[in-house]
Length: 67
Image 1 (tube, rainbow, N blue to C red):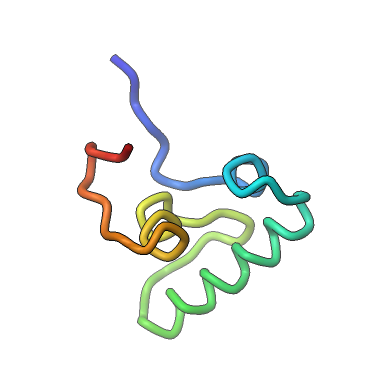
Image 2: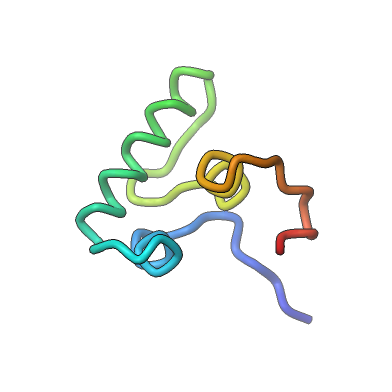
């Protein structure tokens, strides 16, 4: 059974977007700030995989049905 992690690291963001890790950390900080403003808890250096896909790809992703 393959279990996908809930949070993405800067390395995963970097690979997904084709950017350097320093840029990935910058993106993560920006997205985490948005989540903080909405009242969500965040983890420094990581971003919710679902929120990342919603913000980057522009469509809500149903849990377990990521393409």
